[in-house]
Image (tube, rainbow, N blue to C red; front, side, top):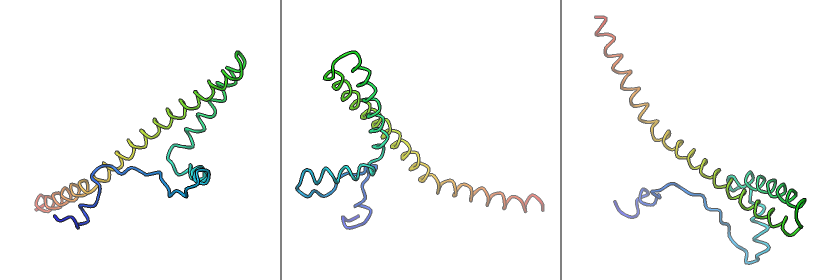
Length: 131
């Protein structure tokens, strides 16, 4: 097999999405573009919403019993922990689902081959048993 064959160019491991766009050189411009494309990242919306809600809730609760600085620290910390945690769990479930789909796709030709062989055996046995 030479290096120009199409089989050698395909990656062997599972494909991972790359969330990288061309940069313009402007940090603010790139940040604006990244925020516009946040919905393309799997699990980002749910994890950010969970983090925002949790951070706001903990911030309000801590704000009742302590100062604003302490409450804001708790709110930001909670936001980061909850967002990262839910994003990680969601990514793990997405990867597991992709593995299951890949296994099903790979096993489909085998199922049809078995079924076809079984049907041929049934058809071959049927005329013999009736004769």
